[in-house]
Image (cartoon, rainbow, N blue to C red; front, side, top):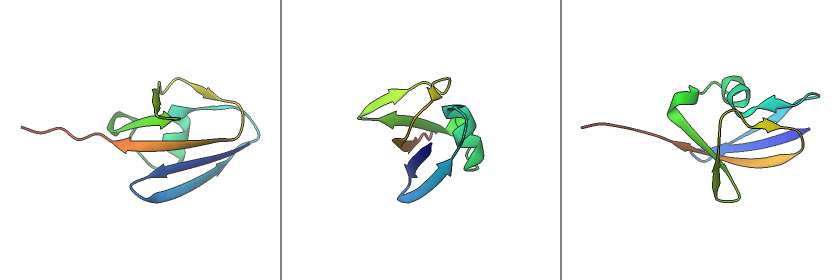
Length: 66
């Protein structure tokens, strides 16, 4: 399967023969899962979601501060 993951205007293409979780996807592209929300079709998906087919995902960097 082919996963197209866009975050901060950078597109990551991840290929996998087996299903992977959103959490695994984030680790593969070198992002800390706790710092990124992942969405598809305008809806945020949990990091435990298992990706089983081609998909386009968007990453939204989460920041906090005071």
